[in-house]
Image 1 (cartoon, rainbow over the protein chains, first blue to last red):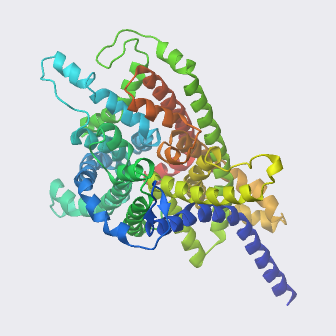
Image 2 (cartoon, rainbow over the protein chains, first blue to last red; image 1 turned 90 degrees about the vertical axis):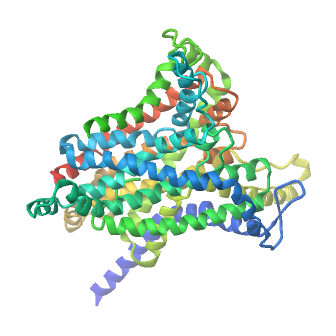
Image 3 (cartoon, one colour; image 1 turned 180 degrees about the horizontal axis):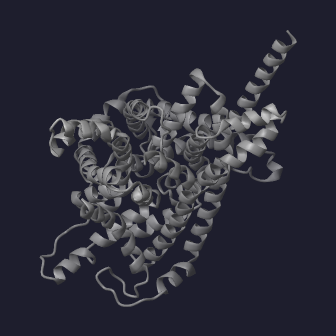
Length: 293
Length: 277
């Protein structure tokens, strides 16, 4: 009985320690994530004040007027999926090369080299393209060797290029993981049964790596919806993503309630996508610790 | 296939190389390479706005990294012992904090802090004795940038430390407990040394993120301009070679730190490679 008592005491002490260890982080999440989201919900039901900002009210009219802004997102609706798709097309062969063709000795070093740029300043990397594509850059070089002067910067093409450049590394990682886990014996079996390499790829490798493609696409798409820098620097303010609209609503036109309604809609769409993403990564990497995005 | 891979690596590193190369160019434009010079670095560092922004960025990134490591490591240890609903709630919060885009984090923090500051300031003003002069006002600044950055980076530290915890050899912890070591001593002599590379990596990742972040700071920086905010507003006014020099410095800082992260986490990766072989 004494032993049982000691164990329960120890159990209680353990949970107190756990609570103490977790408390600061819990506080952080509450004050900087949950509370702000609640404020956004309240604001989204309010009205714009006479000089901007927020005025207390209880109305759904901000959500009703979201539709009118949707026209401005025509570009987003085209460019975000297009950027995601091109990223898949660029990333897949590279991931395949790294996972299947490269010797394990070099594999991780080369993978790190792909992901490394993603962790450096997005601002500087986007600026680099601005520098290259601007009138005095690549177009001037091309004109010097006889090509006609072409407008490169401030076009949808430049935004798309910036997107693929910035987010493609993120796409390589999940595809690589799914290809690396692939049981090579399946391919041997397919070959033994007379399947051509192309057929083996289409019927074995591609379907089994699909979860990686889907998780990568979700991840990139989620991040793209909120993108601000790339359209702003490479699109010259003419190409609007949701992120750009939010910056405008909060910092320039100061229509906080409409901005709040838009953020909340974005967050809800994202939560759905994130849930899907988590489900898929859990299923894809069951048993294996998840590597960083 | 090999050629394709080379092309992709070229695509990834060419713009970075261009910025670095042209930061040493004495001419003004990309199509106009004139000669090697450190002139733009001199110009950039002689600009008091640049040095002030650099100092701000370093302060914010250092404090963010220290806070994130402390909060993230303790939380990772606690979450290891936690099961059930509460654990699921924290796991989702971590994912949300990492994946919600910076724009939304910046806006939500700005709006929430603005409301809190309004309330606090009017309360302070009404309570403050008139004889003491005007009441101190809470506002945006270092604190708000650090707080908003830490939300993201502490979640990152939790993920890094946790993946190390999962791969840790628990027999040593059990042996230590069997030999009557107190839980705290076991932690200090067994767990902490094994976690140290992950904690250091988390520190450097947090520093890098905070040092590089533009969008969150853009909303909540108040008067304290950070280096990325300075760069962004200068770009808006036109591309100058000075930006190339500042950009190269920013890239240099993050590349050095990221390389260190790789070295710190290497033994784990080699384990993976061996397992794959």
